[in-house]
Length: 434
Image 1 (cartoon, one colour):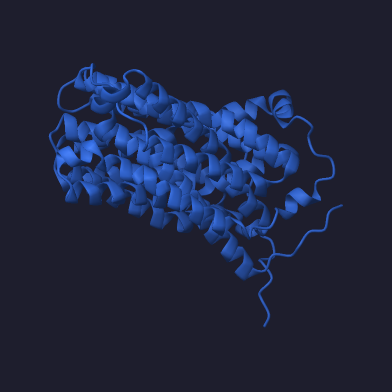
Image 2: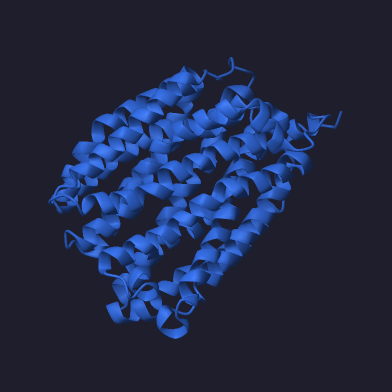
């Protein structure tokens, strides 16, 4: 058996903080594309389409990233289960960072014609491939270092990363939007956030250079030869249930952060800055509450919180779209906050819940595939479906509310079929001496 190093409390804190920072950087790369898709990519890369069709086409390239994420989880999951969690973090960050910088360099349709959207599609695919490996590596390295009774708390730190990445991405866009004219932003300003990804990726690689390998991985004597084959053969039902269960979380997050941004600016005539501020405010609330909610998961269990979050989502989707349709900042903000609260009730504990559902020898593949398939069902489809459904109704997009409620009920049923995994309270991490 491999030697397993003891992780003391300060080391656990450093590991969790570095994991959070790395995850935030990778999700910055992913989210900055979603913001650009909602605001400028349609007319720049699909100028022959109508405004609505151009937005749909831009969201379709956005969705390609989600389709690539399960493939990335298979590729990097194989590496994580065969060779360790740590190599996954370096390789996935390099791939995502490089492809994001490249997006900022792609000429528009007016310059190279149809090659422009094709290059956009390819780079978005590579972004998704890298992010598909990121979540599994970052979460597992944290979870498998953490003491059993505190897995929810420590694993919530990487789960704060998406909120920070989103805020960073949209903060950069908001700053550029406030200082540049519409013409300047469309000409070159939208590219700056993509170029900034190169600097952030370098910072992330430096932070991750000191990571130790997961002690749980080092304990495994018999590694799966083909992890995906074992997952498909023995855990296919679990993968499908977790994908269905997580779909409402993705649907909520991207309905709020991506679809509503496009809907508010294009259909309601709300300024881009107002929409970004309302959305970012809701994401701040979500990020701040993630660790406290995760601690509730350590105390009361993962599954009860997931069921509560799904039920709250089903009840809140119609009020959310009604508040959005007002076009007024405060009602929109309240609608977004309610949606994000139901979202984080589930997703604060998911980073501990999913790994605990799978045996260690295939955990990196199984947990990541289930997590990212949920992204296809909820994240890739929602902006496209919501944009199309909103066109069929009046000012209040009730059809979008109905669609989201249906997804929430599907997820509720899947969570109901999953078992509880919360371990009995264990001895906490050994305090540091000296």
